[in-house]
Image (tube, rainbow, N blue to C red):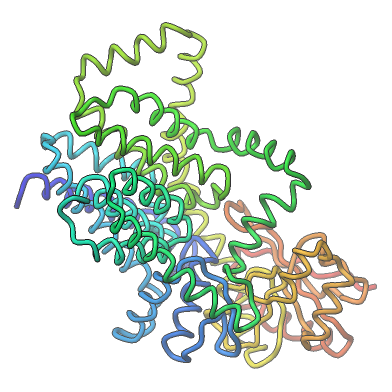
Length: 518
């Protein structure tokens, strides 16, 4: 095997061993396979309903525009049709995507003239800084997104002269279809192609990006939903603009974001520093660093970080690739001189930068322990509530806030109290009417008699809490305690009986908190 490909195979094996160790640690506590995100179950439920019920939705009963990765949902649905529906199918797809990323990147390194040890560190940087194990724990679309984003960068910046024009249409559709954040990169690449007088290829790339966006968007509007998925509408607008109260508050929220996610600031700073030392004849290194830096800035201003390290994973990977590519291909002595000169100008800034530089490494080490524990959290909270619903409310209308596992494991008529899968609650949020009385009114209109929820908005006096379940050492769940509510006396009697009957099936680590008698 080619020496560079051997490095890809080696790092892939390291990644799988590390992820296997994390899954094994979680298995010791749960005794079953599980993922680290409730969102993983949302994607599996959506793909299952698409494959077997021809319905794009959380449940088989009605349409819902919930996922911001239509391509991954379709890919997973095709796998379900071909091989049957299995809980580990997303993990297998992610392992394949990770292998594709490593082998494609090793090929690029060889084409760039890297030595074998330089390729090894390029691949290990991906493993460390994304970080790869925790992405396998969740097994969503982020590894495939990174592979497609890298392929698009390579196509536009290094192959645009020789590549066929229709290839740009294809990759444009892949880029926006895998995650809508791909529009940031795609838009910048269109501008780059036009700046190089490649008008047709730039147009086809942009047109390709519009295809999945408009197909799903207009179809959603025909079903009475928003053009964009509710997950984007609520998380991007609702959490980034609406909750800050004003444009000034929105801008100030950037300071909080920067303070809470220093590893992203380090990645952008590294891109900024190496941008000016890229001197190759065709200026391709400068284009790589500049475009990745601009993508990172757009994501910082308009999108989210966090949530088990996954939203910014592609940014960390692309930043590392652009930085390491530039450092390897430029003069080492010139690189060292540039950094030394910059640090000498401001010793205080140099100390700050060196301290910040440790944050990506700390994040990677921390992610392994948190990711493994997150698997246990999801199993103890989301999977157990799903099994409770499956056993006692499988044909009923119920309301819930974390809906992924419930939608995947059961066939109930599920209504999403948080609004990601039910439009009535999404509208309450966007209209600033997400209050107990309004929530109760919508629940009764929908016929909900039992709800599994948490948080201050769910405090309607007409709702009676029957019991709560708590988990220890919470790393990923929104709350460590979930509450079971009945919306009328008849529902309360049934709920109490069902909860009492189910207690013996609960893991010993789940704490049952009975509601005191009035």
